[in-house]
Amino acid sequence: MKPAEQTSYHYAELGTADRRVGAVDRRAGALPRVAREHSLATVGARPALRVARTLDRDRPAVQRSADPTEIARQRLERRIGAHLPGRRLALAVTDNSFTMISVKREKGLFRLRLHHMFLEADHVVVRALGRYVGENDRHASDALGRYIDVHQDDIRRARRPKTPAITLETSGEVHDLHQLYGDLNARYFRRRIEARITWGIRTPDGGRRRRRNSIKMGSYSVEDRLIRIHPSLDRDFVPRYFVEWIVYHEMLHQKHDIPVVGGRRQFHTPSFLEEEAAFEYFDRARRWERENLNRLLFY
Ligand SMILES: [Zn+2]
Image (cartoon, rainbow, N blue to C red; front, top):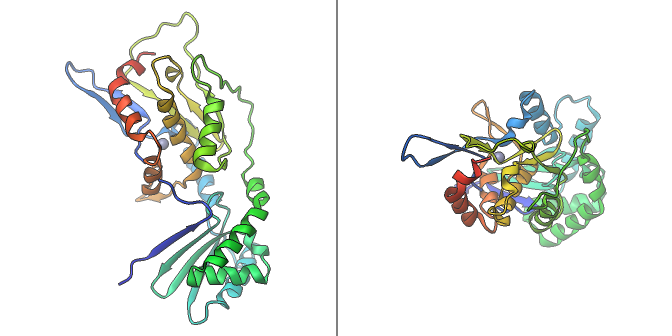
């Protein structure tokens, strides 16, 4: 049997690991233990609701047949299906910001997910979709790439973040988060991440640093599209590549969906983890974390 094949278009899947909270077992001689816990803890107040919104973003528009979007979906499904004679097609229309087209080939069925920008596609583009789905045709792929480029605005409009009044503090004493984020966005995300970033609340002047049991190094709030980085990382001994890794991890949360698996939200899906591992200094950053966690915990 041929395995199901997954093709993602336009935004290539890069590549993983996880942990944001370091917890140290304080028993004498015990090694620091890094708890694999999730950073979306900031989402705190109404996690279920916020996550539901995240899922909405990528949910196929198949609710009611009277829904105009559903009618448009069915129409597009028929139009593309006409170019795939003798084969079955299931189309889902999404508002996913990263994957404009994905095709899963199962036995006797093409599962196609398309960004809603394709609802207005003309017959040339529809034919290209048919060829891309049916034959993975390279010319069709090029034509679709051009269509996506021309419709960039549709994606951006859908992705405009809300802007609650939060004071952002990006230039730290050592690391400039704004600069670091922009650099990562260009290097890894084709500048497609639209989040804000800030240092977390600092210990007030005169406040004494002390040894803690855990540290949440970064977090990403889905609803506010806000990345917070722990100020403990804004110190001379913390290398830039380590701060970058934490920021990169949080940026990935905007890109990746949060499916519910076995009744639990899965923040770090296999594809998330795979992409996290593609970070240039992944191994080095993890090693540095192991070796320096005790210093980071002193804040
Ligand atoms: Zn995470």
